[in-house]
Amino acid sequence: MADTFDTTPACAARLDAEDALAHIRDDFIIPVTPMGDEEVYLAGNSLGLQPRAVRNYVESELDKWGRLGVKGHTEPDRTPTFPWQAYEESLTDQMATLVGALPAEVVVMNGLTVNLHLLMATFYRPTQSRFKVLIEEHAFPSDHFVVASQVRHHGRSAEEAMVTASPRPGEDLLRTDDLLETITKHGDELALVLLPGVHYYTGQVLPLAELVEAAHRVGAMVGFDLAHAVGNIPLGLHDDGADFAAWCTYKYLNSGPGATAGCFVNQRHLGRNDLNRFEGWWGTDKTTRFQMETVFEPIPTVEAWQLSNPPVLSMAPIRASLDVFETVGGMGPLREKSEKQIAYLDHLLDQMLAGRVELITPRPLMERGCQFSLRVLAEGHAGRRVLEALEAEGVTCDWRHPDVIRVAPVPLYNSFTDIYRFAKAMDGILS
Ligand SMILES: *Cc1c(COP(=O)(O)O)cnc(C)c1O
Image (cartoon, rainbow, N blue to C red; front, side):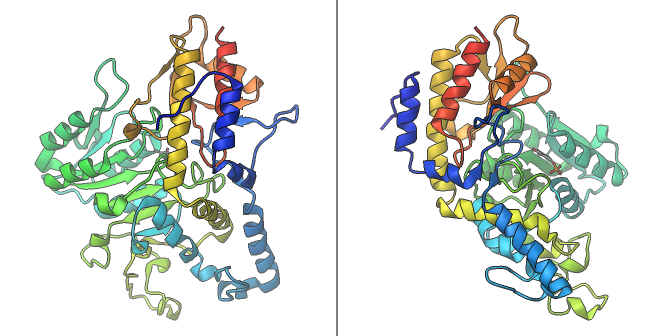
């Protein structure tokens, strides 16, 4: 049944009252304005808010360090605290569920950009004839730098080896048909396709399974950057068939600034001896690791890609965050709420801001997550200044050069009233 919305605050209050997940907001710390009011925080696409349980998880590791010192590596301590030497395992099952993968395919390690490099060390093995990498022209700069430097590392120039896909002139979004055609066109020369799951600038969702199929058909590997997808939209990495993927955990996964990143390698590549891999002691067989032998025996899971022992203090918040996702029943219920919030903000934009703000994010639900990328059209209002005016009213969004305001109602902690207050503030500022 379609929801009926209107532009009154009473409508927002009714939607909040009907929202079965509304109470989860209480599990997060909402920043307050200098006046002491709760902010309308719509920047979870950039840095997710802190789950209240984070402090306990971090404190219990600090406490353990204080009490046990080096013995903390092996002491399970009180359950469910893992011994530090197996700490990464404490995150695997829940993280695998979130991205739709088998536990053997998922590990939490390093930073996102680091993981992209490590995965390219394995999955970008250019030959004389097959050496090109497809990315999109407006890729997040870090992803662009990764690919350009990897290409140079293999003795190629960016000009010859990087294929960039872009929207058509005058358009903001990538067309699936154009991407598929580019893949086909470079066919035999294409070594790797590296694309986002959700685009950081436009919020566009790409059709992962279709892209995998097209890439594999021409014999290319395919990897995804899921920075803006994980915790935002339901994912099925295993079934979609991607060769690898990586994501950060500080955006929709609410695990804190610079938190440890996630990594996926498809089951079909696990346990293979013919793969090149940058190796460290954390990737070798756990039963012989501490015998300090110098023969590398890869762990038969993606953990073989690990280099260093896990940064426990920056992983502890991830446990708190993953618990919140599990408590709400995972991405199914969250996406259901998110779709309602998306429809509601669409309605408010249409009714209150038509002609003054342009949505560049795709309209169809299949092609978007919770991020709205908005361009200010209203005469005499520079987008950047609008953002500052929102800030002054206690509304936090973010700005992406050259001209987009990103607004992300996050179903875990944003209310329908937050969405209403954002639209109302925009209306006031642009009048
Ligand atoms: C946020 C983001 C990054 C950030 O990389 P880090 O290594 O975590 O600093 C990289 N790529 C994309 C697409 C992102 O959205």
